[in-house]
Length: 257
Ligand code: UDP
Image 1 (tube, rainbow, N blue to C red):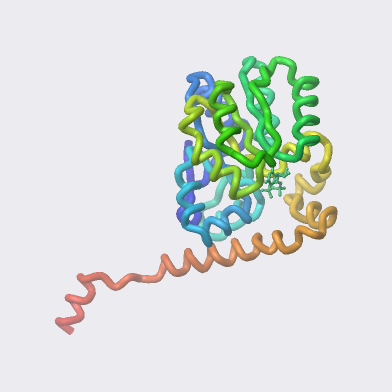
Image 2: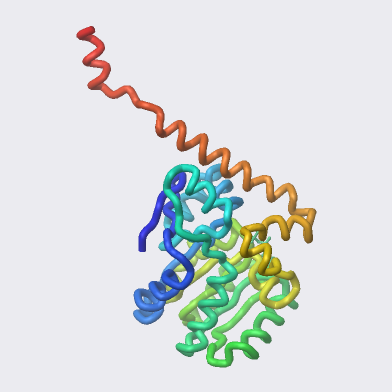
C-alpha cells in the first residue's frame, strides 16, 4: 500500500474501497492482524507534541488520513494524498465485510448505553457478524478488557476510547490478539448508535464536516484549533527540513576560498 510521509508519519495514499480490499485480501482472508490508526489533525498535532504518542502511531501498520485538514496539508507540502479515509466509513465498511465473511468482532469503548445500542444495531443490521464480545470504555482496569479480547479470539477489534487512549491501548495489548485487525475509532460508536448525528451529506461532500461539528457542538471549538495549529506546525517543519544543510564537504570547500 502506497504511503506518503507528513511530518514523520506515513499516511496511506489510497481511497476507502481500495484500502478495504487490500485489508480483505492481505489481512482478513489470511487471519493476519493489523493496527490501524485513523488520524485527524488533532491526532497529527498531538503526535508532534508527544514523542511517545508519535512512536506508538509509527508502530501502526496503517495510518489513515481521517480529516480534510490532513489531505489539505499533504497538498500544501507537495505530497498530495488521494483521499480522506474517514474512520467512521472504514468502520461501516469493515462491518459489511465482517457480515459477509461471518467474522468475529469485539467492540470496546463509549458509555454503557452507547455500547449496548451499538451492539443492538450490529445484531439488527449485520446478522452475519459473530459478536465476540464487547465492553464499555470506562472499565478501570484496561488489562481486564485486553484479556477478555484475547480470550474471545476476534478477527476484528474496534476500540473507540478517543485518542490517544485507544492507540496506546492497541499498541500495548495487540500482542494478546495478534490475528485481529484492530482499529482506533474515536466517537464512532456514538454516531453509529444514533446518539450523535453525523454531518448531513452536503457537509461531507464539501469537506465541511468539521464545521458541522463546530455548529452542533460549540464546546469543541478549542479542540478544533488543532486543525490550523497542525497545518502551521507541518508547514514550519517542512520549511525547516528544506533549508540547505552545511555539510562537511561544503566546509572543506570554504577553506579553499
Ligand atoms: N470514551 C471512553 N472512555 C474514556 C473516554 C472516552 O470510552 O475514558 C469514549 C467516549 O464515550 C466517546 C469516545 O470515547 O464515545 C471519544 O469520542 P470523541 O468524539 O471525543 O473522540 P475523537 O474522535 O475526537 O478521538
